[in-house]
Length: 125
Image 1 (cartoon, helix red, strand yellow):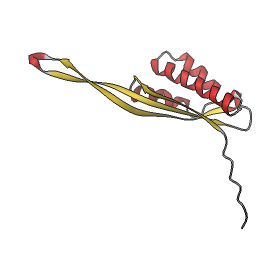
Image 2: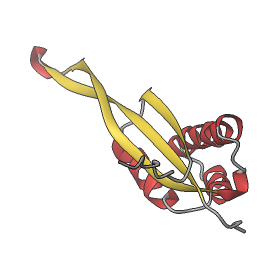
Image 3: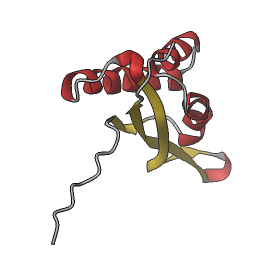
Image 4: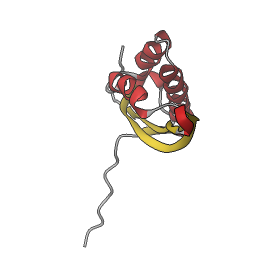
C-alpha cells in the first residue's frame, strides 16, 4: 500500500457578511459584474459605483483581501474574485395601517453575502 499525498488546491480567501438590511435582488446585479475580475480592479469598480450594495460589497472585498494577506500570505495583486454568492436572509414582517381599519404587509428583507478570492499563479495587471 502506498500513501497518497493529498492534492493541494489553489489557496483562496473568504469573507462573509450576514444579516445585511438590503434585499438580495439589489446586491445580485453588482455581484454578477465582479465575478472573474482581479481583486484590485473589482475594488476600483466598486468604489466608482454610488449604491448601498457597492459600499457593502466594497467593505466585504476589503476584508477578503486582508484575510488573504494576513492568514494565507497571498499578494493582493494575484487574487481574482472567484465567486460572490448572495443569499436571502430572514425577513422582518411589519404592517402599515390602511383604509377602513385594514393593514398592508411590509417585508423588510435581509441578505447574506459570501465572497471567495482565488490565488492565481501569474501576475495580473
